[in-house]
Length: 111
Image (cartoon, rainbow, N blue to C red; front, side, top):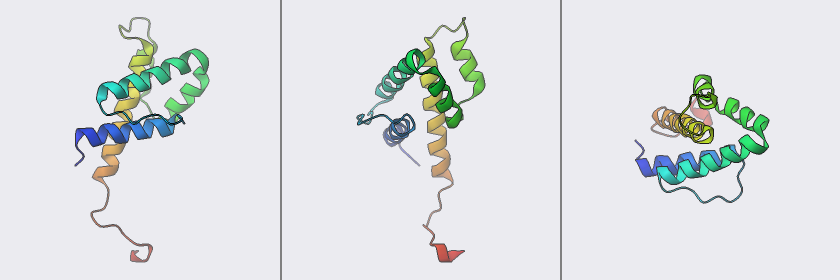
């Protein structure tokens, strides 16, 4: 099972890759990760909303969470709500991969 620090680092690596960010430092804490993702999402909301929506779709972020983020009665800024949804989705993806990873690596001729 992954420890929380490793999970944060892997999530940061996934986000950097998913958003094609150049030379970002891998976040060490949940707060750093949230800051990084919310900054990127905020920029994309202002400058490249269509691209952001494509990435959210590709990441399979829950549509309900996306609608809540953009809702007028949302008490949080949109970029923070979306960043939390992205981080949660990426963490689940990493944990699922870890759960179903074979104990022993298999070779192609093992099939």
